[in-house]
Image (cartoon, rainbow, N blue to C red):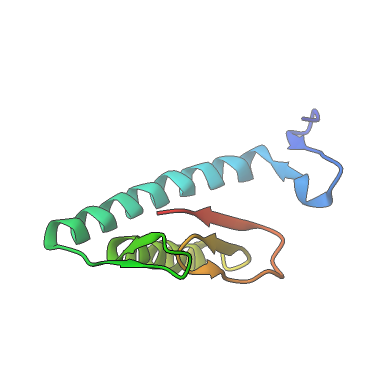
Length: 102
């Protein structure tokens, strides 16, 4: 990290200020809380389990949790995409993306 508080890597996208990192960390913690609350709410009322094309299991709790995560990321960070286990990648053209595996 340089003296001006910016991490500089070999890619221009690596230049992230300390204040921006703090903002992203705070958002990540809030998103984790949102996902925990969403999952707990769905689990408390019951959920369905099905098989994906690759034969792995997926629950309605997984899908709904990822949907709520994506919605919040779109609200807070419209310039970023999301890559999720259940719903795939939202926008490959974006330089930054959040990753979720509910």
